[in-house]
Length: 586
Image (cartoon, rainbow, N blue to C red):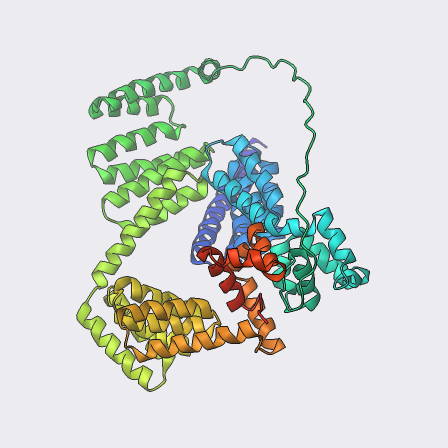
């Protein structure tokens, strides 16, 4: 019976080891897929790893799967995983970061902010949660600018009594849209901009002639809501907190003799390490390892000495041993992450940047440390720069550009883009390749890419007028006539006789005049207004109470309007609204 029990116990132990190996392999595959942006595969790997993992490993795997699901825009599922992480390990700050990211993706910025703030209660120095709070506050602030338009009581009265809009509030489908405007104004405006009722409501709320009709009565001033502050009852006296040193001493006093001895040896080794007496430090760390072989910290400390001595091969060996001991004894994930990061640093010193990047990433999967993330970013940049430098060859770059020119002439624009891209890789300072690729992207209607290339061309050589014509053409085709005119005029300052730039400027002025004089069709005006409302600068102007007053004065108070016309900054904003078709002149 004793032999049978021993056999069953051994079989169970082997099964657990096999599961652990499978889990680690699936986790590594999931991390690799996540790095490549294949989030669906990453979710699958992490799900299978969760099935194979022990309970102690679940919180990390749920955290990783939450990140992958967020990357795959499955924010509801990402939120479920994040909440599972917090349930399994409430002191795991990354769980709160995952929850904040999922809620942020759902657009629930107030709840996301709270999640990040809860994370900071666990770790007040966590950069992810700090940045998350700032991003949520920024989103909430941006959304509140327009939201006030439809939550202010006086504005509501105005909308419900104005002849132009009061009937809308009897329509069930419009009330659903209006509820969206109150909850998420910016998103709802973009979603429902084609509905003429939304434009009418916006026109009346702002007191502007957005669609060419006479403005409504002057917009009511927003009232400031005063909140009465009540004094919170005094909190009961809290018991005196113990200092970290007192807690540490109590914990050490309860340790077995061998562990207390090991800790003492480690402190002696640290003292020698600080004095850079590495030989004595190594001796103390080795005695600590002998006293307590289950703690990976002492092996990691010896690896730090090897690193300082420049013996990177032995440093890597110690890091691998530290990781192995940490896994076997289920040590704190931060200790394992530290060993992985040190191993990565050793590879970086050996100029094996690929291995270094891999181990920095593994370290971050265990524990997201700001210093490790900075090292990873630096290492990736170093590898990228190294690859770029190895690939540079201006002669081959010029050859690729010439081949691209031939393909462009034959109207094979996708192949021409590939050749110009190769030319840029070979010579990143060749402004002509950026200019030519911009022309290809324009032909392919890839206007965002075309604009970026044109701007890069101008950045490299500000005197190359072709760059301005490329940029102006993109802005003209995307109906940004005011921006296109500015671009053409900037090019004409360099080459006043350039006919292509002159023609572009003339066409912009003609389009602007159409909008200003009401010569656009209703469909053209509607399209131009929709594009304009996506422009953050237009949104900022419309949300500015000073500009609202200026526009009302121009409609109702000729004397005040004459004063406003003397201010070039105000008139520039008015001109932008006119050019965008938001405001019309008759």
